Image 1 (cartoon, rainbow over the protein chains, first blue to last red):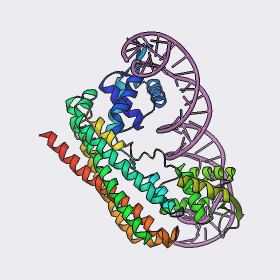
Image 2 (cartoon, rainbow over the protein chains, first blue to last red; image 1 turned 180 degrees about the vertical axis):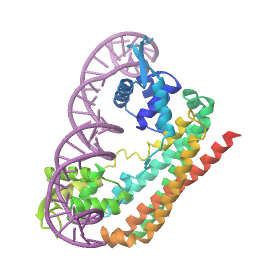
Image 3 (cartoon, rainbow over the protein chains, first blue to last red; image 1 turned 90 degrees about the vertical axis):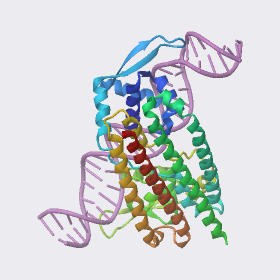
Length: 184
Length: 184
DNA sequence: GAATTCATGTAACTTGTTACATGATTTA
DNA sequence: TAAATCATGTAACAAGTTACATGAATTC
């Protein structure tokens, strides 16, 4: 549902083609959600079939014709209904491959868990650096979607990324100390 | 892959039936990964087809016969290979419905984002309390799987849950302050 | 006698991933 | 002329969810 509603929400901001949407996901929306081209086109077809969006074919300056989607009245109310409706069981992060691997590593060769967590620690640190660099590019993102009014929402998203990255770093460092202690 | 390997890893600790595994997932393994009955039985069939596990039918004290799975030599080496192999692109938490909803709420009625985050804050706090209560039951979990040697691994998993929950609480509180500021 | 627990599954569907197909236009 | 960008998709598969089917034994 999230992908469907993300697409609807973005088309609601401004009419877009599948290609536009893919770029948008890759450029910035991946803070919230990620999607592959194949999935985007599939969902766009589903949304059009339901009547939540409609399309017109447009000349492009380059390459084949563009299929530009606009939201319909029905789509607007579907979006509103979803946003106002109960988030339901928004279960966050309850599946984590790193934890599975760590736990099962108890049975593997010595050092497996440590190596895994060390490489994760690197990744978390790079992620945090990346988010710091994104902070400087926020105006760019705001221009891409939502306008000035959206700035606080971009900041809210960014801050979650940073807080979780910091928590992960703390976790990895702490866990490495625990594993180190086991050797003795 | 994670579910497949979780099942293989648990059967490696001790032979189990699909029913046992489901209970195990519900009771404790959900710290790492969750799974429905239908998915568990499907994966068990796949694992048996590949020869990573084999089964024998057993009388049960109650209800129909149990199908108890044991790991094979091939399964043991598949597990070891997976654990020693590269974790690949273990992309953690890069899809978050709460962020999607919050961001799109900029276009919805006033208060939608605030309500959402307030209800999330409650959920994060309950999660943290729950994890605290779990800490007391750790010996139980250890008995269920892995034995004494697994205690540090359970603690590592638990501490990640707590750190992330704390980060989420911090995020929600901070975000509510930001949204509050917007009203003025 | 009703509800719960034990136990195994199937079917249909939704969501996400990977790989491939096609072809035009522009830029280096 | 080769590579990058523009643009739209299909097919096959993998993983997860929801709903349903069946039936024995035990506990309330």
